[in-house]
Amino acid sequence: MVSKKRSSRAVPENINEEYYQISEEIMASFPRYRPPVDLFFFNEDIAVLAPFSRKGARLSNEQVEEVARLCEDGNLFVSRSDHHIYSEHIVKQLDLVLQDKNLKEAEIVNICIQALHMRYSDFFQQPVKAVFESLQRDIMVVTEYLFEDKLRLNAFMRRLFTDDSPANHAINTMCAGLYMWLETTTDIQRKNLDQIALGLMAHDIGMSRMPPFLLSRQGPLKQDERDKITLHPVQSAKIMQKLEASTQPVIQACFEHHERMDGSGYPQKLKGSQISAVGRIAAVADSFAAMITNRPYAQAKKPMDAAGELGLDPRYDNSFARVLIGGYATSKF
Image (cartoon, rainbow, N blue to C red; front, side, top):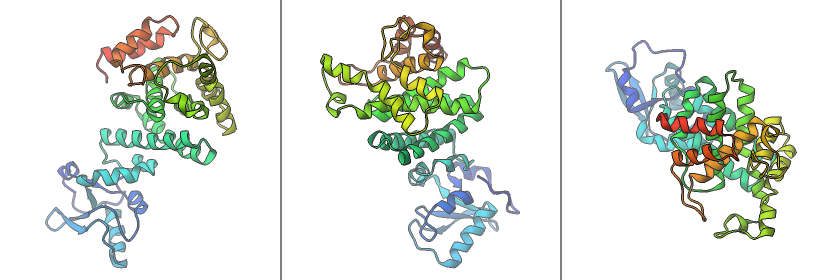
């Protein structure tokens, strides 16, 4: 975020191609005396960037004060060659991504995906309130970013995972589901966006309660093993209720993502209009997310092929599947 106070001489625009202009908020989040990146300052006398300190070097009290002044004036910079360090830092404090106006869209999306992956992986291993709150907080950062411009979701759709893991599946499902919802909703309310994103992200958290050997099974499951797996939507809903996150969209995504339009799904064998709109979106998104990844029992399909199959399958709400087909057919992502 660029400070309101500006230097008397404008910083050349081409500098932002090679450097980030670091905000006071992000600078304050670094260790005060040992910033983990090289710092540069804008030398107004000769209108170029000059080195200020090397990464990891200890700053004196005077230098710390000078860093604060330079930051306030908008004259402190970080090299884009340190992006990996910079982004790893922001991943852990994702709200900072909305405060840095010099990050490019691709950089923002990559950082958001890394953050969601880290938070969900932790949540899947330990589905407790403290861990959940970190995930929820980062999801709200992403929805704030998307609420400002829903077309930004196209960049997320271009980064869907092809390798299977709980976190990859959750992110794929959230992105595909949000795309279908945003494309079919005329009155987009931030509260609904937040809740649907959370429900799509957490829809499979009940799988964390399943025996680990079932999740890594290479071949077909036995009937008693299938019976255990079919309980995971109920477990997902129970976990979210325990975490006091049981809004209607969240419970619908968790409880209904395996229901099918012909009544052949589970756990309630709902049929047609008995399944909520969120549940129907979650069903398409969940299956699509699985189909485009390499799993022990099936190779990944191309996204357009997966969407096309779902569009022809009467067990799914084809109107939502066609939204995905349209996105790929028009090369939006």
